Length: 453
Image (tube, rainbow, N blue to C red; front, side, top):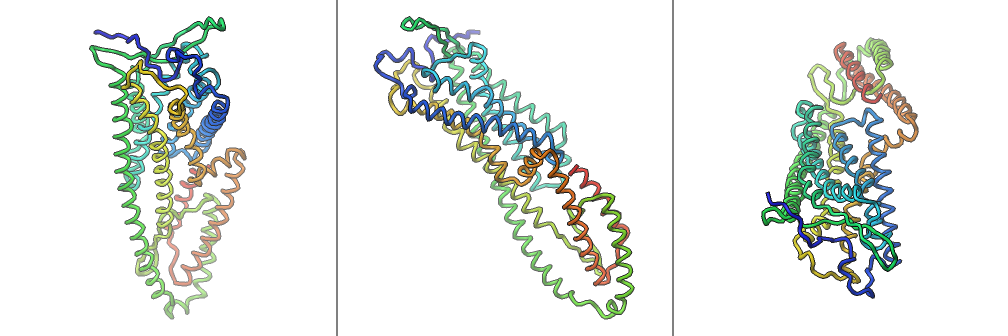
């Protein structure tokens, strides 16, 4: 096997071997440019590390947040946290803090920095695909989600994404070059972290890998994700229209049956006594369980009519989750695109071609890095603005569980009031309370309370 490293550096980062004219100063070395970029780097670092750590803390610390969707979001937060720890500060020092291109962190961190820099965007794309496929199944085949998305399947799919991303970026790890140089003018050593072109049987491996990564981890995923969310959008639109028709027909049916028959009115005293006894029984069930069971529908009456009260809430909940996922995908697509384009161009250009260090084009490469880092920092912000459950989990995390207990008590009180009014309505229409319905209520409430605990 003929595996060699070309002597020409493929440095997109440093200027020492290109700046023959000492009077030319890189724009990245100007104080104002340095200060602006440092401010942006600090903001991105704080959002990336603190925000994603908070997301992981909320998911791990709240049982109600341990859902399939949040499992993938937790993996995405881990990937983004790695970017914050191993890439953002190092990149800031590399470009803005010291002289443009200087690397003071040594050989080991040089390898980790370049490898993770190429690894994380691929892993994030794979995790977004898994997240979107899970949402696709939940909307189109909601009864299959629990059977298909088992714990073993989730772990296996996630490990597959991470493994593929790790293996496909190994050439970048092999091509990393750390150089310890000496500046005689100041009498100091300084390091450079860069890459060499990796040649195997006259094939430029980095050119091949960068092009394949662009196609496999960006173009194809976005094509698939666009198809998934377009299909989900059509399904949700149709569901909304169907629900509007159901609500309209139900309103007419309720109006037609609003007046109770005379025989029901003659038995009102007996019904009132039965209602009081039933309410006592219902409230005792609520005291044992403590949460609202109304996650589906109930049936009753002589004509066996059926009401589906929370269906519109279920559709709204799905829509909110889909909107969050779609915005995350859109942010990834827009913020990662400049980096993918620049990286592909940088490996295909002439390695020793001169570059203008005092032109605006010198700011393109650090800007693409900042945009890619911001893609990792923006996700916690999106969760906080678009997900009510995440906002509640964050509040509960900072209040050490007090808000959860208060919310639970409020739900209990709301349940009692709601069940009381519902039972009175049943009695007014002469609908007897079924023991089976009461038993099902207790069971459903017990399952719900386990989620809140």
